[in-house]
Image (cartoon, rainbow, N blue to C red; front, top):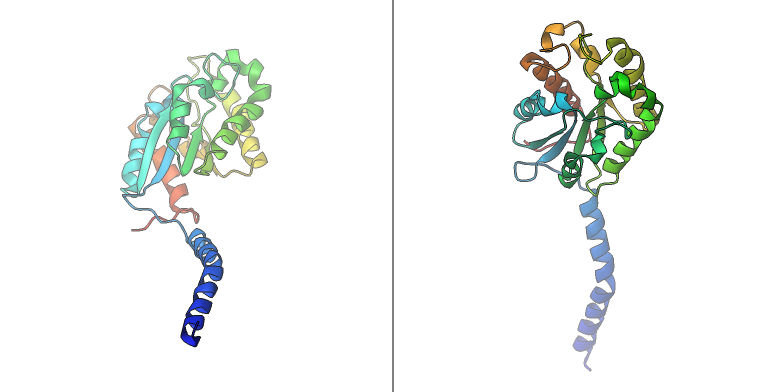
Length: 232
């Protein structure tokens, strides 16, 4: 073997030896790059909730506010609850599975109004534990979504089995406690409504103004987040 051949062989050996390290470093650099989003790779937002999410139209308004770099999915289920002991737990509904299959980057959960029903008060000792199970299910997704807890709007009607006082004094504090325990950010939809009973068509369900208000509160939270930065 001549000198030139030996030099070539040495170079090849060095390249082969370093190649795995080079590949490793390249992969590490790729993993360190911030994720970018575009209409071809939008931020996927799953709106989870009860009828206030399903029929108010707020997810559609949110989509309009956010634009093409986002994809908003409405996974609300009318009558659903946080409680796993009710007649309609959210986690038992097909929309829950669809929300998980959506592989969201962000999950906005706004539940609790139906847990205010008088017949379900006896189950609310487990409200936070049941809520934690719902949150944990989303946290375990491969998409590793951010979870935001939206406090339900106030109730301005005493004509049903819903209690404005129980929602304010029990459900909302329990929702806040759950968020604190799991270190989750909250979206204060409850206080955002203020005294605007005119934003609720029946004292419970938002009209178009109420839907706009909810969408704006969610939008402002997403817009101010430092963790999701879509490309223009």
